[in-house]
Image (cartoon, rainbow, N blue to C red; front, top):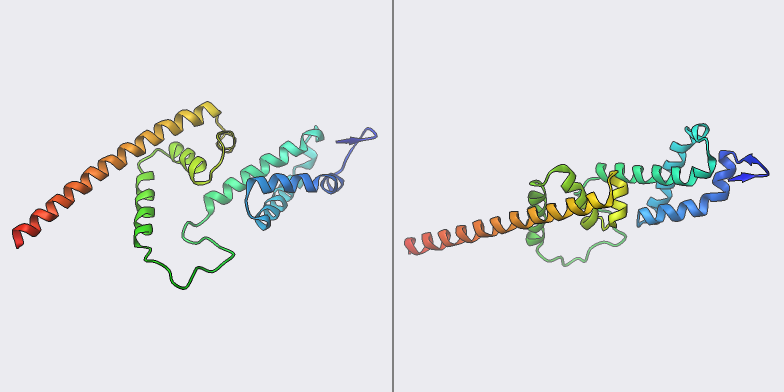
Length: 182
């Protein structure tokens, strides 16, 4: 990051690295506008700490960490009810009752997991992050992510199986009541 032995100042650094930094932001969030917002937020946060970065050659790594932390904050703060889309849904929408039931079941089943397990499952499978990205976002090793995910998925399978058995028992009881009423 040095030019003729001089450390680049922040403005010059951003001017020289903005394309590479934006590419990094695009890898973190799929939407180009969100990527620009993410980069701008990270730059504002980094500007205040610029003088504290002793080795300016590590500024890219510092900024990537700020972007990851910011993305994680945004993810935690987001509302699951609304998801903006570029296109309006078709006028003839199928009954979404089953979809809502599936989503409610998913949210309910995820609640049985410990917070750490839930975070790993959501980042790996819902956010489709790699094991390495998940480990970095949560501040744990990749081995810990793998073992935590393995235990969490086993717990989810167990919970779903027990609920399925409960559901079938409930259905049998309901059919029995209908026969008795007839």
